[in-house]
Length: 503
Image (cartoon, rainbow, N blue to C red; front, side, top):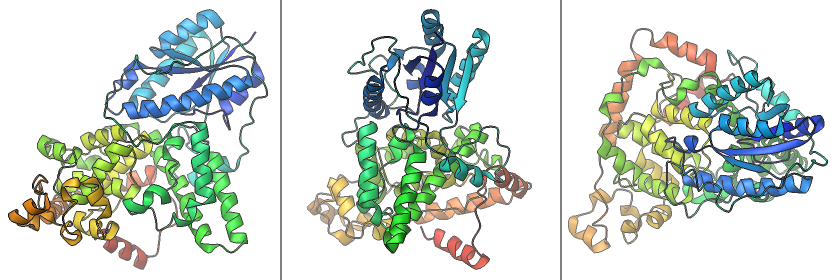
């Protein structure tokens, strides 16, 4: 009996699951998920991520049970688990999706490959996204991505031979506490069923306001797809999402629904960006720890101020929209893209914090934490890629643009709930008596002058950009990691750069 081990990682579904489909063709399947305590001690992990995964595991187990063999859940170090299981089952091969995760998972996968080689066991890895292993440059990558997304979904196995009875514990992560333990009362629910419901509600109803609705934290909570955690942990197939999005867009175009078609086109581009950024980490794993452009080494590392980091991470910087976004994120485990960018930009430019610690804090808060996207975005918003325009978000302007009636700010900062709307944008201008009268006395004064801090940041980064050799390295970064999508005309580029400086 040639038992095939299917190792589930960030692919917690049975639909469009090529490792499961391929393994089932070759023999009886033993589906496995391993809770690894050492991983959950890493500084980018959190209980909110575990809670989401636990719900995904429950759905995955039920789906596998319907096919005939439930999910085997093990807890321990991966090689020890494999040794133990192989002694009992003498499995012929391991089937798994490729994972572009953090450095810990990379080293774990290297160890698993070495174990398989020693044991004489085949290790079959299959791409889950449009991410290409061993890619040296980006020429032609978009075509490869499109070809992958156009492929038919992997078929669902007919019946799985029952090898053993399995049962999931109610709290599967109890023996592996995560690094981050903040409560997350507003977290999205995980699981295959929950993901399907979110996708259906988006494509059938909410997508029409996607374009134009995802910038403000007020509207983005419903205008956004809200699919990110389901993509991050694989309870939904990205290929299925792309294909269904394009089918829905084609229908919208056929009935001349320009608004919906435009929004879905915008969403389709974001799905492409998902893999574009993960591909960067696949090619440059050191992005998790080191500046993309090494010419920025030493720029911020020695200037880290713990008191500023603490004010930022607790939502007490004195800038209402920044603080409201941090508090919203802490409660919900999610925040829209523009506000994520603003939080990181504020930490990097206004507070002049090296990106690594803010990135880890945000990783713990994000239920949808995806390392490939996360570390690239944190570096982009910190100005350390060398190939992206600096985007120094003005926290007052962003508040006026994205929350003009201060509904969001006053909802998440109760200290400002009684302050008149137009005074909420710059509460530090309130007099002492007025602050006390409005009950805003406990809200902090700004930790920095945002205009002076932005000016200083531009000046410092400009000095590094003018160093000898900077341009040559930036060109190499662009060659290896940069997008190959057609650039706008020179006039539009100038306009885009000018607008970016106003953020």
